[in-house]
Length: 378
Image (cartoon, rainbow, N blue to C red; front, side, top):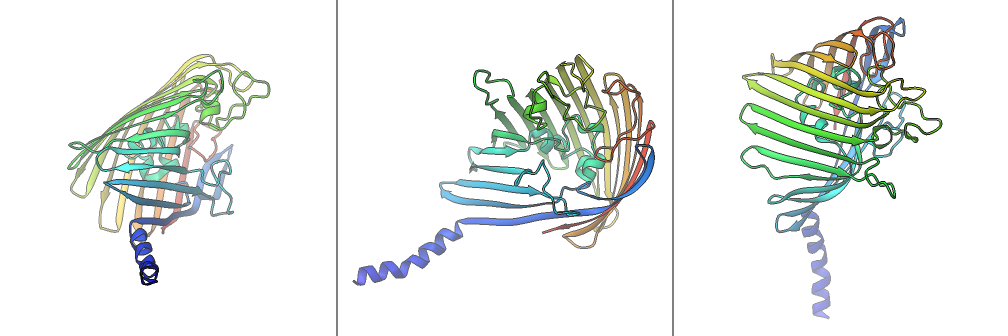
């Protein structure tokens, strides 16, 4: 009886010890504001927007210590629109991220589920999109620097850091019986950090992008197929058999400032002509960006960027500029102005018009937008 009593008394202590080795964190981000667009389908407009600087989200992140330096980890992250409460990412409950895995200080981490690719995490982390998200991203987000897509059914490996270097790789099988590679995706990434210098390389190779990453229920060529692309910059090319993206970026901190350069190349290969995609062959994009930011005070940050993009038959130029003011460590105000100019012929076969990402296209080659948003982290 004494042994049983002692065992019962020690149960709360064992439970406390187990609890001390595990953790679950609730976190989130709410972003909402107003934007003025000088030309949206031929008319000026003022509208409420959400997530144009950082996508509103809430999530759960957890880990359990398994001993010997090994941990079980998971992340479940939901995207939502605070203006109406609706789910984003095509109505997915955890559309931003949903994965589980194992992590070791010695061997790195392996995770399984819906995840970001290295292009978004590494190159996007240095580009202007890291300051202004959708409004700062390259036209049509043809290079996925602002996570136009996440990768479903992905197996991802992240190495430990060796002398400032860290590598990552991801593989997502196509999952189609008899045609293993039909919607297959693989990605590679390399990051280097040393003092004020950060640099990164990334590569994505995506088969059948309409289905594998852009959520089309039908493949190009099937009856009823309609391009899932939303921007005239790329919508006529996404019926390609293969979408390849290469990115290289570097940034350097100088005192209270930082300057960054970004190069990306995206290729839509073996484009299939359909009723909504008039092209064939290959369409290549090359983008060159320079950006900078400077902390005038601990609370006031100002940033600017310039991007020049060449497409198959079009050219795009974009300037972003604006300050960010921190009201506290968790709440800030963000103001940004965006100017975009287009020339040539876009992916739909029409004269190219400006189309600042997510704001709708202009009826002319030039478009200007100004946005003020309130952001709160928890």
